[in-house]
Image (tube, rainbow, N blue to C red; front, top):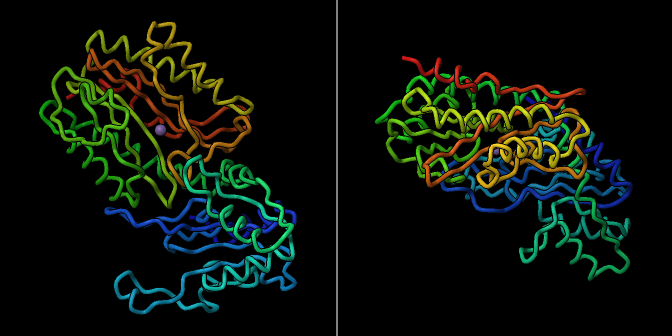
Length: 402
Ligand SMILES: [Mn+2]
């Protein structure tokens, strides 16, 4: 769990970095998914801990003469009729300020006040900092830049700066509380894999493996981290296979890419198991190449290394085995509030949490193999927090032995 005080500290630290510039972070107003809960923008969650307030925003107004108006949370107006459909919401008052950590540390207002507050802030400060990631052309302009551009058409002399790395760098380096949540998500996932591996056998459907894993995530207090992939045979060569509806066949390999989230933080594990419980000599040879590549990348993942260097460590092993063309994706990514978390411009640093996931995909042989672990980067190297899932040929065959 992350304490209210940690969110306050994050907001204050960001405000200091802004050096007098105005900034807005939006929760977003996207539609809720058909299945699962609505979830706000990760930058907004990171700064507030609030993940269930569509339309909310956080304004940094550092030159406000009222110290309590320098950081203000804006929430949608109360609407009693809507709340009978969507759930009851609190009135603005000291209880809400206390719960969100704004008592003595800022204000809470309704979003109807945001345009005037932002305009006033920019008239005084004349300096705006873009924190949301810039949109890639031709997508719509990012929400804070869009607001700043509109205000600059009404107030001359507002300077708009690119500060998009500020929150990326903060989010990339995990606090002890964040690492504890990521480890809990990893532990839940490890327990689920260890249980599910016992049931894998010919005739079972991919969907049953998915259900077994996801049920355990929920039983253990976690949630489903992302769309589970359970692909056997040729389906294991499809990177984003989500149908998960085919029977497991004797002699096929099974790629499982699935993980739990806990407290909003996501784990990410992939393993490849033989449906029969035993690798064929061919499968084993290919599997050992990917495993060797994974171990080489894990060894390379340490402070000062770039993702390019970590990727090269794995790619060299796979290329040497003559399988370079079969490794068609990147080596890994940071983990956090989202499964593909923010990637800072700097090399790997202590307390980053990253995945390592080399793979090879040979559709003509109906063979896909991927192995993925989650690493907490330490001062000298890393700590593998998902090593509890069987990974060597020997461990897998022993765990599946029946
Ligand atoms: Mn991954």
